[in-house]
Amino acid sequence: MKNEYTAIIKEDGHWWLGWIEEIPGVNCQETSYAELLESLKITLQEALVFNREDALLNAGTNYREERIAL
Image (cartoon, rainbow, N blue to C red; front, side, top):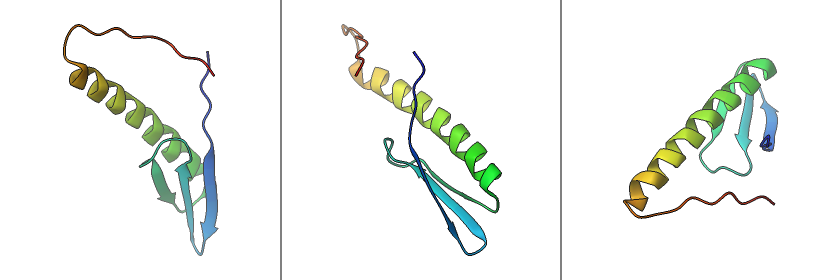
């Protein structure tokens, strides 16, 4: 299953600003559109790894993982 996310992107003067609609805190700014897309991908990947590690740490022991598809 391939996950897809929505990037909100806008140009503001000499900067390209973007954030991922579904994941709070994933936002970037770059001087070009291409650099912004790459930064958003990297930042999103890092956020997903961090959120997963944090969730598992907080679960402690005796938990189960279930996949949920929408």
